[in-house]
Length: 302
Length: 312
Image (tube, rainbow over all chains, first blue to last red; front, side, top):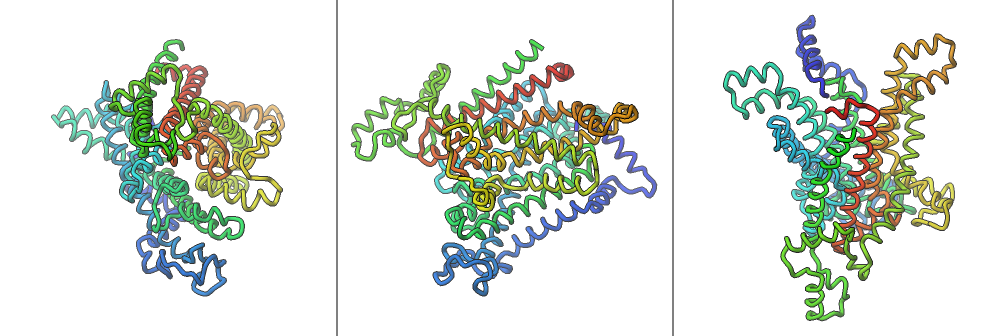
């Protein structure tokens, strides 16, 4: 990631290639030629649609308790394709609404993390000096602390965390990667000719940073954000699994796994489906994120 | 090298100070009355007030934090209120012994399986072996550790007759058996990371001139891959394994919960549920120190082998 100049040279060359396609168009072509990236996009699309249309897709309300249909195996009684849980709630409906929660928290927390990371990274890389040293020590601190434990400590202090407080907590503990990447980019970009030219024309710090430098960091930021959504969904599932994430009656996949724990031997479907939903979603987002990275910046390939 | 070591050590101090401040603030804000936790439900209000004064809990925040730092400097992590005054240092030490074993075993898992999968994939790139192992690696990145743990308990443990009821520390063999499945669950993510890195590094190295020379000399393919290529891939792999170790030591929270292992992560989670302030603070602080120290050691090793790092 440090050799940004080389990357720029290459994209300039591609921009001048026959046919005159823009680098973005070329990257999109690369993206859609990758089977895994398209598969990832498809899975992510299904998740988004499921989340948005949950009330219309789910066959039942997620909270509807039924004493007649407790712990029914998948397909055992009509109307409950994936079975029912220990309170007789429809597993499929809870999974569908769970997609909504995962999506909301994944995107919301990622938004918080990206905004924080970009601000800290840009300020750190652009101004340098003592401010950079200070912010880097703060970043080190947040990297050193066990995220999951700090998160559950905060939720324990709040007694009953709301959705908004959850994504604030998760975002606040996950901005370090973004800030490191943005700082590195800004550090190398600010010495570029166009940044120097803008400065010599009298552009202020804010203008150089927001109009000239940050737009050139968008590629890595978008890639990181996609992968962060996957990380956040895992984070939320872990928190809920410890009982401190999304509170009932909201159905969260992690919470469903926690509730399934006592019954995992005799009713394994209660844990298999929510787990599979998490794996599939995270896999899809990782596929898509990797594809984006390979398409927009093959040099970032690990 | 001397100045580099010194500079890195000096950078660690403000980080640890900041961690201690955050951790203490969190434990200070925890609801619940430590005196009540220590004395039990039957204690009357007067005794509790006396106890609070004795513990210094009636003093303002800065004074309490200063007192905490003073104790930290002397290596005193305080006492557990829920465990009737047992030393936090002792609790953390006992629990970390379990977590450390788990993390070391998970690291072994990731080294053995990760390097094997990466080498196999790199030797035949774009073959079904390559696609298969990279798909497994992506699965490893996407599987939540607690879900993998469940699947191992329900579908594997019973079939091979392995008990998953906590940690049996009778002897080395029982310890190994108790940690086998947990270390597989915990090590899956690092295995995937090591596999992907080994693959890409090996593919790059196998295209080098000296590898062609080795082949031209008539060396067997095994000798070329294992002696000439893998040895040169070792430095980045070892760096990543080291960097992962820090994450494994603190990331064992969920694994320990699923497998009911009395490790540090689970200990702190229980302390959070019981509002046992000093165990929370001491445990989280200890984990942060471990993370910082492990990463420092990895960086120093790296700087030792690659002089360019020192000049940065």
